[in-house]
Amino acid sequence: MSLLKTFIDHFTRRDRAALGGGPEAIKKQVAQGKLLARDRIKAILDPGSFHEYDLFVEHKCSDFGMEKKQLPGDGVITGTGTILGHPVAIFAQDFTVAGGSLGLAHARKITKIMDHAMKLGIPLIGINDSGGARIQEGVNSLAGYGEIFFRNTMASGVIPQISIVLGPCAGGAVYSPALTDFVFVVDKISKMFITGPEVIKTVLGEEISMEDLGGARVQSEISGNAHFYAKSEAECFEQVKRLVTFIPWNNRKKADSFPPRFPKAGFDIGAIIPAKASQPYDVRDVIRAICDDSDFMEIQALWAANMTIGFARLEGHTVGIVANQPLVLAGVLDVDSSDKAARFIRFCDAFNIPLVTFVDLPGYLPGVDQEHAGVIRHGAKILYAYSEATVPKITVILRKAYGGGYIAMCSRHLGADFVFAWPTAEIAVMGPEGAANIIFKGEIAAAKDPEALRKQKVQEYAEKFASPYVAAANGHVDAVIAPQETRDFLVHAIEVSVEKNEHRPAKKHGVPPF
Ligand code: HXC
Image 1 (cartoon, protein in one colour):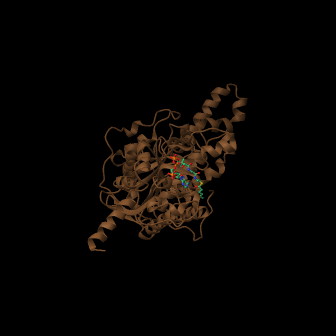
Image 2 (cartoon, protein in one colour):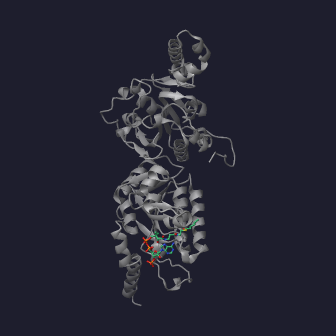
Image 3 (cartoon, protein in one colour):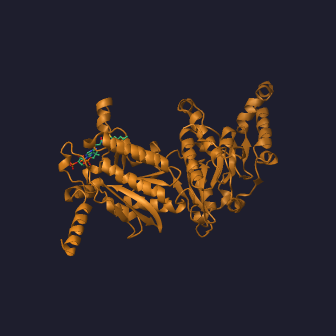
């Protein structure tokens, strides 16, 4: 073959493979409002930075007519590129090719790019759009999933792993995203479930649509499986690009520092907390009043909203924020909010991101439902995660810090490096009303005017404990600070902690209350 013919042949093969499942399948994909796999990758990465590998990989299956089927790229596109100049490894399942189903060759392409990501110490981004295990390949496709899950687990805490679900993610396939750090979903497009509507109808006789079973809103609001919800693929890709600015490229690095920015004007930090301790307020106003450019990237905003978590910067340094949200259930700890915070704390600890905790909660949520749902086991996760974390840990008690909630929210006793409290802080075993009712029960009952005595005892208890000064007198709080001083104290604490080096006892691993 002449040199010219060789090159023409090469480009013809490449263009044919890049066409994926062909015009009909592409038309179907576009008609569903979905982008094509390669276009998705290009929309996330820096322009011109995507380099594709394994385009010519072929499957070896010869059962059920598969020997006649050519599946370009075996239904998945893999490669490397950059985001804001930083390298990432990426794969995107191509639904136009056999429904993006996962056969052995498809899986091997994914595991190869995962191995690259691990060796190179760069984040892995996976775009899921697949009918699941390729039915014709039987156990070989199950083997492929297993090899992916194994690598997801090995990579956990070493490189950040991001999953974007942009189509079906059915059956055991959901466990790869579930093992990764952040899951992004898009309204009407993402569908995640273990058993689909047909199986549910057959086994349980119940009818449910895919959307109601495992659509984007369900996964963002009810199950908590998704961390970021977007209205469109374009919005989702902007979220991904924003997220990676806050996190480091691997666990040996720190997140990039940005030029320091003051919070935006318009937050009167001294006026956010209402005069009455029982009144709610939005803790995100406190966060935005303190962080650089008032830029707070909230995670799992729609699920377990009594706990607010996310990334922000202080004087250019990324911090992980964990805050009780008094707007929802008074900011209590419960099964879901404990899970939500604990996992985030572990992510920050694994990736050298200092933790800033804002405390305002009446304690753990009482009730039969919570007890039976395992609030003991789940609530223990947050204690474990904070105690285990060795990144700088800074706590600000804004208002209520009662009972187990006080201890759990990164108290000094769980290893906080710095604990600050606003003058409005109330640190006690429980609120003054409940406390006085219990410890002065007899006296109140025997009094001539029980109500007057009860009020007096509530007042006495409040004066003694519903303040930060007893805790400060005992060294449990390092400084009582005015709200306006908070940013300064936090920035200073972060900057003096830059070289923090704390170790835990050597062990194979702990046994957290998973
Ligand atoms: C082989 C598959 C496939 C699969 C889809 N296709 N899923 N091929 N194995 N799992 C093929 C279809 O045959 C079709 O091929 C093309 O992909 C497009 O599929 P459609 O059904 O036409 O698309 P759509 O109507 O959009 O429906 C999408 C879907 C549906 C809801 C995902 O395809 C579906 O229900 N698929 C099966 C889902 C499933 O049960 N998967 C197995 C889960 S168990 P042609 O040639 O006609 O274009 C599992 C175990 C993993 O994954 C365990 C790991 C631990």
